[in-house]
Image: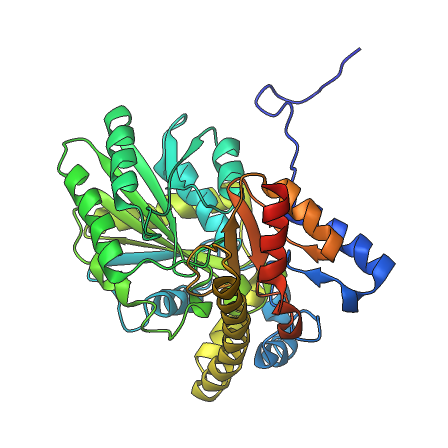
Length: 414
């Protein structure tokens, strides 16, 4: 009897998402005990202090008033030109690096990551990121026939581990001619860490060193999905200036997402912005990623692109939007501050949280820790290296006491 009709490369694929699994356990607890008694720290979306999914008010208003043709018509495969110009400008703010750029619309930030892996690595290549990472990176690599390898994100002083990063780049560049490096920053998922100016400088120094080797190519993908919840908009983009005038065998790709910054997660709209000192490399970037879009999803959400354009071409709307988004950022920032202050007071060793949706606590057996936390009706996400707390989704009144309960659970399990 035939047990599988799948191609050999697809046999055995099962999407086991620990995040959605943890959310399911939380929903079961809510139905049994009531939402007031349950703390849901699993959701990677902004929930207000009443526990409802938050949407920036002006985003909803503008979306509901868009012309029907903007919502239902096909968009150009590369994206609406005005949208591409605006996402490029929004990505860099006042710190646009010197070099040639081009943008291609993508299905959320994930789409840009997919295209980068597919178009800038060879079959069987290793892709490099830190050991604390968004789990979907691994799935994206595996789906494309690549491998994800990691280096320790933090050194013993809980700074960016430049020595481990450099050693891993040395190792991989000796084995393969092209190397893709993924860095999720600022407001890293899942730790909330942001590299300092000097740490970015060290990263680029390592890349420049290897770019001197004939025949080698390096692509740096900066996943900026959470940048709009990382601090003041131009301060958080200051590091981008360092990407000016890199050698032409170093390509930088910034993956922009509307999901978080515009609170339209389900609209699946983003863009990838390529930066190079070579005009030819950027012309190629625009061409090959447009081709891959056509071969993957054809085109992306026209309505979401029209939404971004409508907000950002009207100075009054743009100002209101930034005020309303900042209110959400400040709400998340206060929640994170409560956890980190209480962690310090009780002696819980959380990783350094700068900003963003998530923070993390190292744990040897994260699954057991998260399961035990269910006794306190606290639901978090177990990762390979520890426990992820989604501060974006926990109302401020429920943040108090979580750190101490995590510590008690760690002491019980480990």
